Length: 188
Image 1 (cartoon, one colour):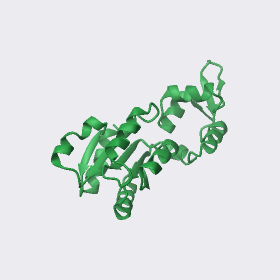
Image 2: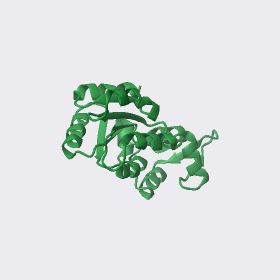
Image 3: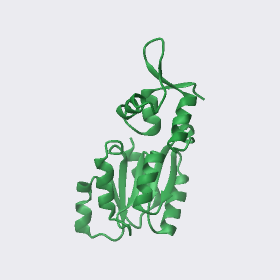
Image 4: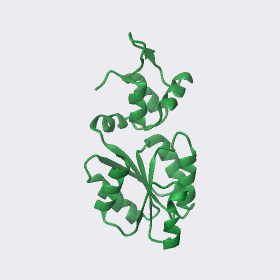
């Protein structure tokens, strides 16, 4: 276990920009110090307190040290959600969590800080294209890679999918290996 982290390391762990971490420091949300070389550092205990205060799972630190990439899955079909979570969980280097609504995704995205989101375009509470646009318009979330999935949109709509901010698209049904490879490729 590390005793302290740099701003860059915290940004990497939480999947945010260094500017975001510096803003948290300026707003006294994270306690920091300068080391003997003048580098801003954050002690492990202070980072854990920040995570707990913001209801961000502390296990993110374990994922970061192992190189595991966090994936949020958003699908309103419980069976599909279970299959996707289990399939991604079997892949080395990936950890998945799932939610069934866009509202839950927005809340969870800020807490879980995923590297990628697998987003059903045909959600019942809001169109997934709009969700992607909202996430990409948020400075703290815009760098998160989003893969759209659907079996319900037309081929014409598929051609327009990237204009909504999606980094990739897969038509349901698809092979889990293809999804895993797509996630890994967009995270390279």
